[in-house]
Image (cartoon, rainbow, N blue to C red; front, side):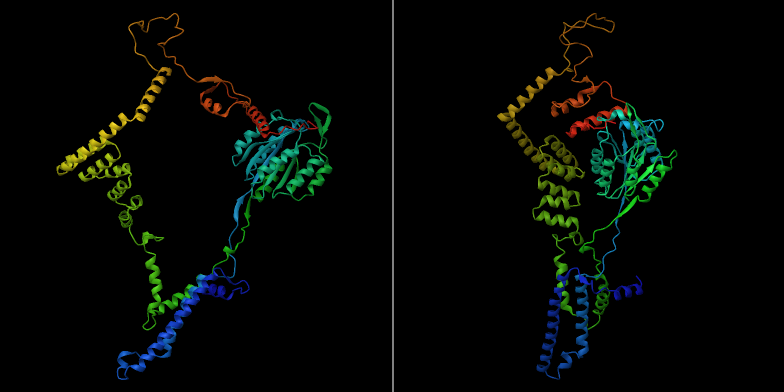
Length: 585
């Protein structure tokens, strides 16, 4: 930062907004005032001694000081510590310039699948042309993650928001009128679904609606909903001016009322695009989405976001602190609080003990205090860590660490840990290995082996004569025997009565009962057909237990059939009875 910028920052203080972020720190001026008073009181005591000491001895006992030599150090002390206190209090007069969070917009594509979309005034049909337009729209690369919903008498999500346009195109191709559970055009259901999917989206985004005609009621619902959200609505009309008859309802003419279109176009949040033979209609929609793709979310201002300018006061503090090295300027006892602060913060229980002590030293202090588990976590030396784990009762961890020490002492300690863990065979091997490495350990190892043998014998005796242990063992054996009888893969030993068979032996008829000497075994795996929907009376635990034992004969490969079944299931799970539309087209 240049001097001109620093000067401009200091001179440009807005005193009307000036305040302290931590005003309680200003109470530190009270002990500072006490320090100044003590300094002047000490000078008065010095002047009293001058009256008592003989004038001939005063040149040898006192230094000649002027008033300036007394006042200047005290003034520097007040300015330095005062600047530090003001800096700690946090002077502030302007807000932080925090950039907003960058968030991306999305686009939700809603395709009308009602019967009127099967009209052929647009070749091959309105619905097929709508799917082509979705494909062209995605080829125009709007740049936003896209979601897809389909609606008729009910509304259903097809795909959540995704940037994979390829899978979006594949799903759009499989959409047709026959997959909808209920016929008609249920605009309230569509608005409820769109609101559910767009509510979590924080960036102002776009809903892209592809339909053939809107009446006054549907237009009013759409306008009211879009104006309660942060999003925009793009509508692409998939119908000709003359209209066309609805297949199956030849007396019904489906066409768009242009008066409704004119009223909707007056809404600034709604844009209606007429269908074109080229790609200009959807490329224009994609371009408008791309222009507003990234939004900056405004950051909520709070009291914690004021710019703390206390760092500016470090400059006078450092300049004044540099003068304390001059002779006669040092106020030695003022440093005592800082020394005490440093000394109290350098203990093992301080916030940063690693600044003052090594890990092993901290572990040693904890070990001596009897906190063995914490000591084991602090020790970096494997042997010390293993000893701490041994004292803490974690014998397996201690044995693993002792095994890293290939010396005789390490193997002996490993044997002790394994014996404590009840792994007597491994402990015996470790003791024997220690004796091979160092014969002087033979006596101690033999004593440890004897103790281990006694402990093992005692444990075996308890297990042998404990009624609870005996009953558990008998129960386990009975269960194993019972399971062996039910095991279809259990082999039996051949008996002399068995017919001697060879590879050339022809068997005219297989036995209908008894153990079969063949490769066919029983299995709880059975075949089943795919259900249209889960049965309401099935228990969830039965389905969970049988799910892994069912082999499906045939899986449906038609995406349209899959969507149809999914929509039916969604409709059933919603718990709402489908509303029969007055106009089923």
